[in-house]
Image (cartoon, rainbow, N blue to C red; front, side, top):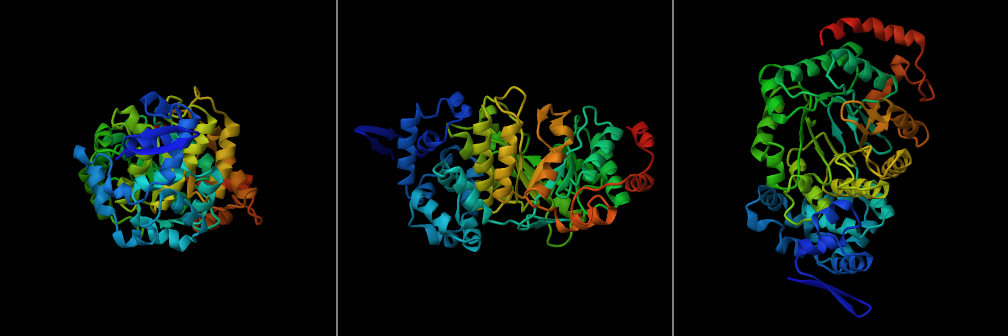
Length: 466
């Protein structure tokens, strides 16, 4: 059915729900590239007003991609809990925003399985930034492996020791640098430059030795393709977290070389290892606005709504970690700092409403119209919004993926200035090793460095094995 709104005598019509969602989306380059964005601020305002007046039930009556045999759409339908939806079933999108602003965290949490991704995307489009922060801050999602992630008042970090050639010495030195800066309680996670089973096994074994020799209460992950992980697990690799990038349509996931069946196979293999404590989580997913568009698999749906649909895939597998790599795909999809900041807060908001342990890679590519000040702003807003974790690399410069992320120093800023300590298990380890002093500040001494060195094999020996 068409949707419409009149602005100063001009009637703006939106023929489908997908068209309405796209036109209501705050400005971003990806939707303009796809030819689905509003023509200007007046049409965008009209679309947002029409969207605000749209009943939430419309999203059940008009599911996106229902006519395309899309398994993500089928999954969204299977996940929907009518009883959980009941408290807001009579509301419009605009009234739902008001409901969220007045609700406490317990009420928002109870709603999670009664929401579709499209509902969360819709309400995010009519929220101010402070609305996105205020609502998400009330929705805590706590997960556990060796550390407990997502507790109120805490911020976890992924220590990302990438290396251009997957050199063992380079990975080790970078990981140790992050640990000495207090980074790594969510995961020590390496994006491999190659994607072979042999290199995957070497990287996870390296991280396992680092973790066990230093007694670090965290988990490790090689972010290779899930099919590589399945084969490596079958060969006895010490896999903590099973990783995969996911998207919001079956076709986009096929572009990643996956479907739901492959993810279920990986989840079964990971669980069979018995490394995850009872009641804990071990799956790790990454997403990012623009992935479906870049794969020509968006079907006229705006990139932020497609991003929210990816969260249906993630939550099917009860993950330990989910993060949006918000500015990584490039300025064709998020042009500048303003668009990246908005997208990061939207993604975190939608993921939390759907019950996911959301983190954000606060990042941008070197050809985007963004800089470190924009990332400082997004980090600070995300901390206020209760983000579960962020990603940090040495000097904010990922030398393998060639993009700008947060630095370990940025995590120290959040710890000290914004008063966000790490996971409690990791915090105790930092204090016991002397990395944190008795006031919670970084305080590594020469004696500490010597002690850590004695507990590791010679770095040159590990480098020679690369």
